[in-house]
Image (cartoon, rainbow, N blue to C red; front, side, top):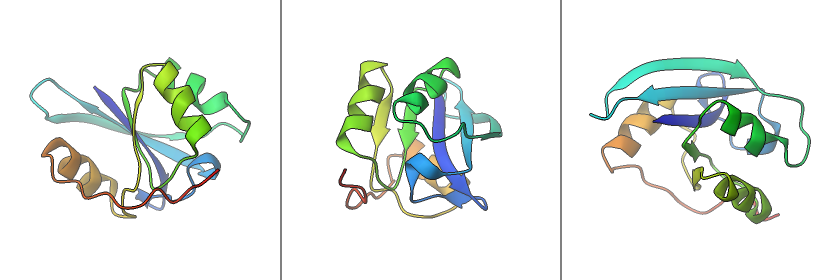
Length: 111
C-alpha cells in the first residue's frame, strides 16, 4: 500500500493542490512502513494530480483539505481520500492512520 501526503518542511501541507512536494510512504501487508520518498509535485494543473499519483501506484491520500471535484477524480482512479488531517509530521500521520488513531477534523477546502 502507498500513502501520499502533500508536504512542506516535513509536515502535512494544508493546501493540497499547491504543495511543493509529496511524501509517498510504502506500507507492507503487516502495516509496517518499509519505505518513504519525497517527490517534487508537478506544476499545478486541474485534474493532473489524480493521474500523476495513480501512475505512482498511490492507494490513499491524506490531506488537510481537498475540493469535492478533486476527491471525485481520485475516487474514479480507486484512490481513497482522507481529509481533515492535522498539520503534523508525516511519520505521526501515517502511524496514526495505520493504527486507526488518526483524528481528522473539518475539510479545509470548500471548492
